[in-house]
Image 1 (cartoon, helix red, strand yellow):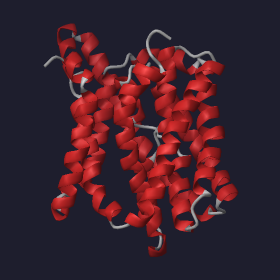
Image 2 (cartoon, rainbow, N blue to C red):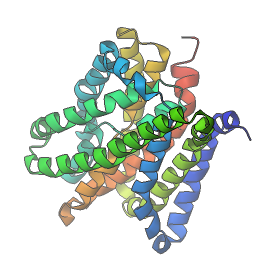
Image 3 (cartoon, helix red, strand yellow):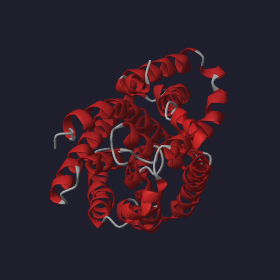
Image 4 (spheres, rainbow, N blue to C red):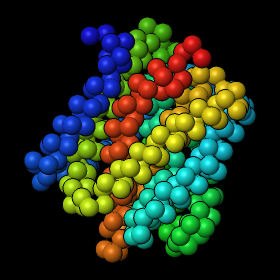
Amino acid sequence: MTRQALEKYQVLVYLAAIAIGLALGTVLPGQIGVLEALLWPLLGTLLYVTFTQVPLTQLRSAWRDTRFMTAAIVGNFLLLPLVAWGLASLFIEPAVRLGMLLVLLLPCTDWFITFSHLGGGRVQYAIAFSPVSLLLQLLLLPFYLWLFLEQSLLVAMVQRELLLAFAGLILLPLMLAFGTQKWAQRHRIRERHIERLGWLPVPLLALVVFSIAATQVSVVSASLPVLGGLLLAFSGFLIAAALLARLLSRVFELPTAQGRVLAFSLSTRNSFVVLPLALSLPASYELAVIAIVFQSLVELIGMAIFLWWIPQRLFPTNT
């Protein structure tokens, strides 16, 4: 199989990985502890491999593109918080609302970069937006929590988790990838090693989604009564985010490749960062954990579909 064929059928690979993970987590819940320990190293490796495929010297031009940056900021930090608040308001349980808002208010700063790469977007813009997104999350989260929930005591904990995730999943892989590219430039005969790394994003992402599905299915299955409403809410959020990306792309006249990055940025959330925070909450807030975990599973399946829908239908090449 060629690399192009692997990327062509990547959606089927991810759906199969999710299905196998859900089955394994259901049948052998006590045998998957090692997958939880491997999740963050797998994510870091995935981001490193993705970064090696991107000409990092072009980041400066991405930062200077004010149209894309403005569209991403308006979508992620002005419009989508209103969508998240509206969806969370449909639920009575305070813990469910807290979990929904924690996960939907914070845009993803890591693996959406890989989705942008595999979905045909200009990854330089995804990488360039990641630190901007992190800074705005740290600044605006206290306001969001005060406005929607008055949960100001959670702010310091969320900020700590965000900084740790950014350092471990963005800065470290980015520096390693930059060093790898410099090394390959000095030893041109070794540039084929960079090309070989291009085979890895699809299988690594499959391992990541497999691990998440396997480790979280038992948590979700324990709260079946609330899952129907959450499924509708999180699916609605994904659709709203994608359509909002299309609208913003037209308003700001973004090229197709930038529109794809915007769509993945708006539709992915920071569930891996806020999950440790939710797990540290009192026992009475266990439904917040359920909401966050279930959102990550819905997002996994949604992203597998989006990898086909966004480049083929929402932002086709001929636009």
